[in-house]
Image (cartoon, rainbow, N blue to C red; front, side, top):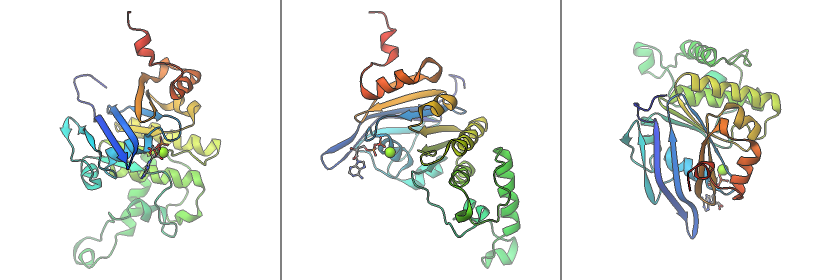
Length: 262
Ligand SMILES: Nc1ncnc2c1ncn2[C@@H]1O[C@H](COP(=O)(O)OP(=O)(O)O)[C@@H](O)[C@H]1O
Ligand SMILES: [Mg+2]
């Protein structure tokens, strides 16, 4: 991470209202390559709305998103994907009857070479091999068999597959909305390790999570939202859980401001 390289993501001044609910008043988010940024805040703070404006599922009323310093068209999932942004949404979209390998390649299946491929025949062997390579490169050891249907996996294993799928599609940034919600301690740990491996591949990661102890374990920077605004953006090593909670609840100001001379 150097200052000479532009950040992977720079979102500024994002705003979004739903009717008269102003869900997002001032969304700011910067992420560098190889960095995990945790986005935290109480329920309704605007976290999901902010990332939806970045991943293209919502068209913001105002603001700008730049990827590698290039402006990205807003309100288009396709444009966000083409800019290398992949998102793991709250509540996964995976096909339970399809295998791990098939889910990894869902809607970008590998076809057999030549005429058979043009006739629509899938290259299952190549997909299995690529699935193994991907698991291996992310240090995922929990899956013994990529031909198992996703519906037969544990919640943690399924979440790991969802993260792996996003990683395989993201050139620059992976966004995860509550990837460890509803998981037990061991399973959450598995997901956190996959997030670390994702960062180590040089991708930027945005992690939304309520699990503050785990957030502090993995995040390089913490961005706190309250009532639709970003109220703090601080290196994770400077923060304790109590301070994050105080920022979330509005009981403490951004620590950066406190350290400024009066
Ligand atoms: N599609 C929507 N329609 C109406 N209100 C919404 C919609 N999405 C979010 N909101 C409202 O916007 C606010 C922020 O929500 P959200 O971004 O989901 O917060 P968070 O993810 O931090 O819990 C909440 O008050 C929520 O009820
Ligand atoms: Mg949310």
